[in-house]
View 1: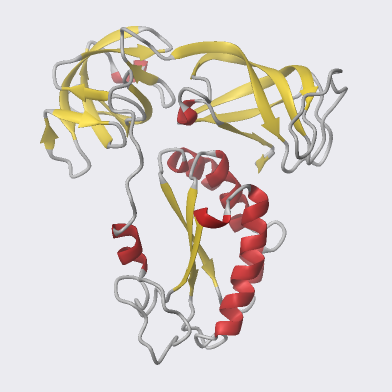
View 2 (view 1 turned 135 degrees about the vertical axis):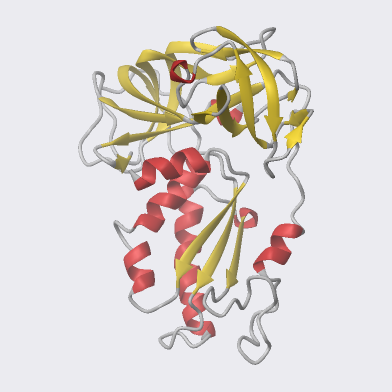
Amino acid sequence: LYVSEMIGGASQADVGILVISARKGEYEAGFERGGQSREHAILAKTQGVNKLIVVINKMDDPTVGWAEERYNECISKLSLFLRGVGYAKEDLIFMPVSGFTGEGLKERIPKEHAPWYKGPALLEYLDDMPLLQRNINDPFMLPVAGKMKDLGTVVEGKIESGNIKKGQNLLLMPNKVSVEVLTIYNETEAEADAAFCGEQVRLRLKNIEEEDVSTGYVLTSPLKPVHTVTRFEAQVAIVELKSILSSGFSCVMHVHTAIEEVNFVQLLHKLEKGTNRKSRKPPAFAKQGMKIIAVLETNEPVCLETYEDYQQLGRFTLRDQGQTI
């Protein structure tokens, strides 16, 4: 459950901070085979967190003592693994910190502790990061991450595309209900007249009951609504899978804030390693390490866009029996 909650959160983030313990034994447990930190890194990448700050914590621990050797050991293994997951060298930044003493978080680490580290503190680095390009004028899309009753129906989520004004009419998909935006609350809980792509907001809606909204529904522009499908073609990279996968295989798909069961209807192509060339013949099955193109089907309609048009509504994670595949 912890991991599936994490997926919905990661799909709404621009930047990820992966916290790894430098303490002897803890680093190994969290990061070596089967550790949760590995799965978190894979999920962050598949959910679209394209920049990762890797914070090596507990540098003050007696087993570490701010030792440069231990720091380097941690980051060289991590960097190898993260590049394998798909992060480019320039998308990764490593920094030593101590959450316990606060060193390296807001203020830079005192020279006497880590004379070998010349870089910024974590908050300093975050404050100086350039903002992402936003599609402010594209059609409006907000995947619903949560809902509540509060003088009407209130939904929350991150605006993935476009902008919105108070009093505007929107469409809630996939159930095609027309709603009006009564109030917009921004991240500081203050009322606002408008909100833009990239913001986390809460919206009070008119014309819909709270029980008719589900997490994973998408609020969208009535003029160019989000696509709703039950069958789609996708590229799937199989990271971890104990058995093999063939047509008829079913698992759980996490896409933006939605969680749906999916079925592999047909395997179309295998992609060659390195070149991504499509095989002419469809593969009979797929196994760990392979990339394929397949047709997937859901039982219920799900809101999806093509990856080219809207990455955040066109990328997904598949899980089976509590493991990301």
